[in-house]
Length: 210
Image (cartoon, rainbow, N blue to C red; front, side):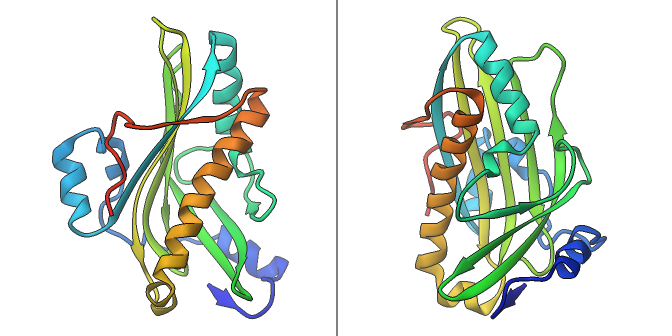
């Protein structure tokens, strides 16, 4: 939803009550991005991105990072407003508000799946875009722990394409904002977990596809 003024509290509340279906057909596909077949199929229709960040080492750090992830702490970004309530769970609707080039964007999304197994070494959830979002697609957030080297890692994987004419017109800017968001989210999660994010090249699910 694009507007010339900030969205009102009523408009944001209405977005958070949305019961509309996702604005793309491949719901849950980010869970299969480790598969080259899935990644290549999506890349024929979307921009497919993956970025990984090392946070440090130790089980205690992993526990802090996964708690921060589930609490949406990676959205504590100065240039972005996050709206929602409670920890991440499937079916939850959230929204972000951002100002770009003098325009205000209200971006509603629904959590497609959430996987937080007790005692596991990998936790993740993904949300997908709802009608009104300037993009169409899905984004996964993941925190993992390597029990051998004890490394803790934060990853963002997504597939997306413009959903409105303004996004298509401003495609290069939209892509820059997506890259900026990934870096900012990693910094925010690291800060919440008491760590520092260092980007790691050559992520397991494949490098960014444009």
